[in-house]
Image (cartoon, rainbow, N blue to C red; front, top):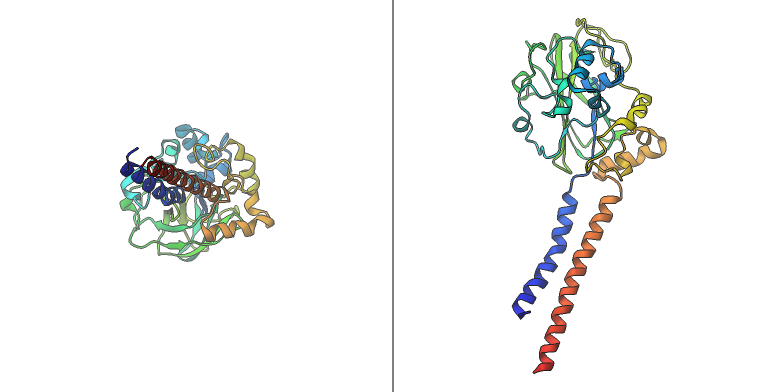
Length: 324
């Protein structure tokens, strides 16, 4: 091999180490979740039982998109969103994030089970099954919103999010953060976007709410009120989530099956001995030891290749000197 080519090969190999580290460090790890309070449409329908939902809206969602979407309740996502939400999701498909599996959630109807709320401060709870760094933004529909029409971006007050939270700590299976609901009346919708900062992946959810006197945080309690004739929303229990985890597919297809921290089963997150680990993951953006081992292995391979090329170059140079 000519000397110049040997030199170029050595330089390329040496350069491969930082490139390998960068590529693997940037590779997206898995994170999943949906709004738990006010409960999202997909969580509500899952709580009703995917095989025999009770509300007319959830029955229609299953008839349109099937039951698997409900078992995959924490997987309404776009892997390469990177903040391009309005570019990637067309009007009428906001609740499914333009994902065919979840198309039943886009049905325009005024009888989706709703959480009763009132204007003022509100504590949001986002059910999470894989904590990671990122920013949550929650938007409310504008006054005059018509739930009987397909939801469009123009229906949301994008200039005034009702809640914004960056890197909240996960505890007990939830991210919890505060916001303020504006003056509204009757049926409205809250649209949540969780944009991860450790990957371009983003998650989306639609939560139906009714504004009424005496209402407050009621998701998951079975109580409520408001002016809507639709059923009161209720979030799935930990037992329900655990029971259906085996039917979920969101941990497959490159979504971290071998990483216990991304399990769809919330029990490890809720267990006292694991709660601290979940919070540390949320603080660091990590997802277990696997990514670090992979990065370390890649670096070792890259550096080993560089050393091999350097060794070949030395032997070639030594041979050339001996020949002379």
